Image 1 (tube, rainbow, N blue to C red):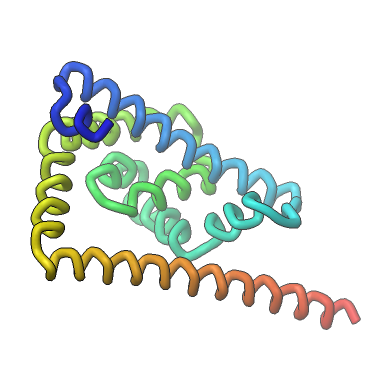
Image 2 (image 1 turned 45 degrees about the vertical axis):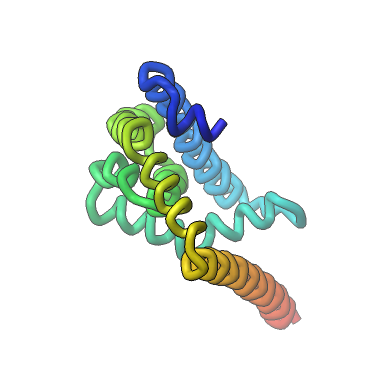
Length: 178
């Protein structure tokens, strides 16, 4: 698969990547809308992946996406496709804000096309070159291992904080009820 992404013919690669990013962005948008509809109806899943998803959608990352949409308007949506990580926050933020689907879709199409253009031309080649260069030296391997450790530690710490926050909310709620 990676060979297709780095060496495939652009006339196949570009439409493939456009569809992939379109579906990913739409999925993130609809997850945001789903979470908002649950909040409006005051429904909270008790356990499982839905609880973790709602905790993520209620976190700081999506707050930044919502704030960016409030600050710069719909124009931030296509721009977000030129960034790493920020795209997901903005797409989820648009769903949380319940932006009309047609407006969101019209705003995201130029971003999808830009993202597919970048990744079908130089994007995967650059990522491949970075990993090949890093894997060829002991410092590069150490850097990749350190990055992986930092990412795992960050995920673990955030999950623990979310669990603690949820437990404190339950305890506070019981104390107020008593």
